[in-house]
Length: 621
Image (cartoon, rainbow, N blue to C red; front, side):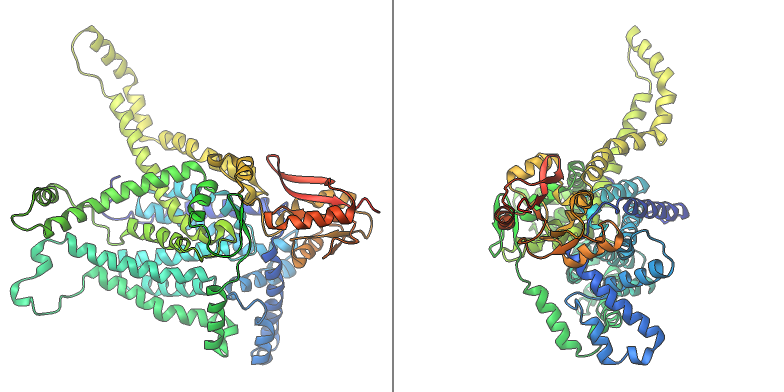
């Protein structure tokens, strides 16, 4: 895959296309939110955001009282195991867009809207980065493939942190990349600000310094390896002097210094909980996540609760949930980038290590290094940064002590970079297709009557083929072929995305047979509200099982559930019982059988014939 000498400059049209990607994605998320139930964690964040919102109102009305340490702690102690930035956005969206402007039909959507906007911004960023680093075709295909990942599409709807951290994480990596590519002061400062925002979004941000430091070291080593020997060693009279750091090294140091200084300041400024007793509270926050309790998760028919966790979980679940065409293009893009970027440095390193009278293998390495052309200069180390962003995130799951609850959401920060590699491969495929059409457009050379007939036929169709090769037809047709399956899978899976699996494992039925988790978080209650509204008697009770009480209350406030239907926390005495199928929760179904006198659910809902949520009716009443 040919690498450009310098990333393409950002044109005004690219900004407009990026905005169009973002707006279209947010519009799609809004259009599909109405039948998506609320996840357990959303319920907790609704409550926290309401407390933060009350504090923001107090800050406007009585600033001195609101800034009293007791008032701050009363509001911000709620859900303080997670930073406050995204919940603050939920609160402000609800206060301004819903309570003041009344923009949304459902109150829950007002809390979800900031995460939707950030998800749209993430799609736009993937387009911009792919366009600047490769070309517009690479950027557009990467953005589309990223947007149409079924699991990411689900999380992009939610009033949670998982989709927002994907965007903010990528923004920080992009600003770091621009710092290396463009230099100056602006981009290192933006890198520090973005890192602070990431710190105040979710603890996934802790991987960013690892990626950036590893990238800076690798870039420094690569520059020294590929530099000519004279330039690398310097003249003898300067050997004793410390060599000046390469320009790329200075740029990386500037970005890293901004992350180390500006980042913590932004983090501190935006999280009132740590304004007092900062160090003890930060230790508590870090300890909560470094020593997180383990939750149950089914994998290949076995329920995993405590370590050792299966090391194959992350790669298997990625292969089972990311569309196959996206994974194939990612693999092609990664291999092509490795070939283009690693072969020459390895050959140079081998040539330098080879003694003057070395063996044949080392002599061959010296000859190979002499024949190879160095790759086009890439001051941002683009492919290396993309690879490290993926490797660092997935590397955490090599440890058997890493919890696997939450499924794919914990490594979604790698997905923009998976899509960028895929987009680069798609762009290369388009170039190959265009070259093939241009070859067909040229008249054949040969002897005899058959060659004359072929030449006349080629001459007749040659201009049309040449126009097709240079126009938008090739990328449009190939793009439609590539994106069709991800779009179909993503839209078909909604609103059951956590039950969605790719054809690689047989879809949802095949995954159920393999013993892969069908659902968690209790969000599929939203899929049975029509049944409940129709069948629950006036002032009837429903055991809500895995649905959080605040999530159930939001369904009532939205008007999706009848106001008189009461959610209860026990099966005994309820009129109906929900059962969200998870392997470790089978006992909840057994309790319903005993309490209701039946083993047959009154209603079953799920994806492609796979039961996901079952509703039991109390036959004893």
